Amino acid sequence: MPPTDPPAVFDAHAFADPALLRQALTHRSAGAPHNERLEFLGDAVLGLIVSEALYARWPKADEGSLTRARAELVRESSLAEVARRLAIGERLTLGPGEMKSGGHRRDSILSDALEAVIGAIYLDAGFEACRRVVLPWFEQAVSAVPASKVGKDAKTRLQEWLQGRQKPLPQYELKSESGEEHARVFVVRCVVSDPPAAGEGEGGSRRAAEQVAAAAVLEQLESGA
Amino acid sequence: MPPTDPPAVFDAHAFADPALLRQALTHRSAGAPHNERLEFLGDAVLGLIVSEALYARWPKADEGSLTRARAELVRESSLAEVARRLAIGERLTLGPGEMKSGGHRRDSILSDALEAVIGAIYLDAGFEACRRVVLPWFEQAVSAVPASKVGKDAKTRLQEWLQGRQKPLPQYELKSESGEEHARVFVVRCVVSDPPAAGEGEGGSRRAAEQVAAAAVLEQLESGA
Image 1: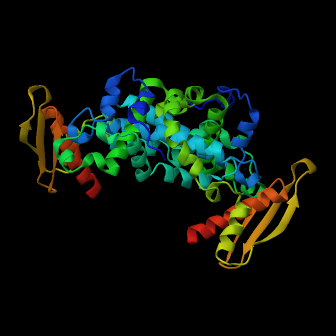
Image 2: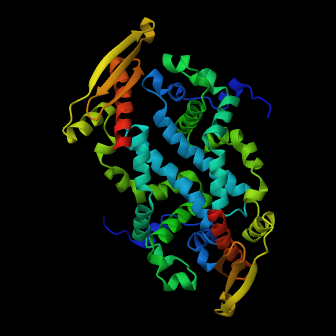
Image 3: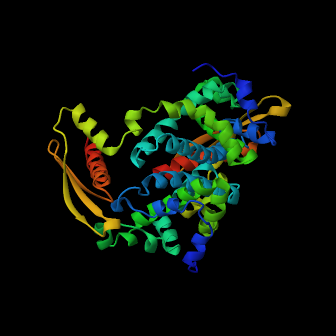
């Protein structure tokens, strides 16, 4: 990723209340008002911005895949990397102890400060404005989530999981079909022999029920792996 | 809390795209499109709405207190309670299996559906509109967070923690005072004898440094308790 010009990035939002930015860049070690409360808020703001971006970018990903992808995007080391691109470390105010021990280069301090900056922008300008500034910092990472993790449906992912381990493919069996013409309900059972696992799914079509059953089996296999 | 008239609550937002509401009220057991992806999104929307409300309501609470209060407000049983007030269970579409086993009364299904409804409103109308609808569902719970948990500063909470256990009060000791006239730095050490714990804090005033030191000690005591 090409380095971003730091002043330009911060200039992406001109603070109506510059004290908010100052607070966001003040570590607890430098005394109050420090950035911990803003970090609490910014963490939630960032969670929504990233969640929505993943939701829109990967329309077929199920909840579990989206949750895993989000955790990866907002984990400390990922946030610290973004903070470094924005040169946040150079602008941090630290207490003398943290300063001496190189706190402005530490992942935890950088990641917290980035969240605090996001919280400060949110308070200063509201959600939409904050998203406009923050989303570009994460867009490349959102697009770079491997399709194998989020872009595929459950049947495909189950098949790949088994093939990758040279195991036999799953069997799908229609257990029942019921309901009125306009509201049929299909129940499908998905069975995997090695490792042994099985799950049922219901759906308005046979294919939909297979997807639900495959997701249930995949969940068992992934949690047991 | 008086029961809220369910249609009125849902009428608080008239969906431009009613299919979103239908999807939010469709459990996975009833087949696709179900509400799991909307739940992923709604969880993040709700996280921000509740975080901001706590942040504004408790201006002195530290990050740890806010995080604990948020976890309590959005835990499954709390969300299920809100879902019951909104009579979401009655409007859920479930598969026949879940229907028979009383799924529309289950905390996990109700809580997920509530989050999905919030995600659907967000997609339908944006963050500000969604907050206007959703915040009233949680305002009473936000106000009901006990002040003892979030409303007090670290020194007060440390004192109460020790008094509650009939332990001696903490000692604060000024370790150093340095820096220019306009940027003094105070370092204070807080020592507790029983259970033994100590921590240092820096601040722009003696009082601010004491707060930071008390918070450090409180964290040790609470994590060790």
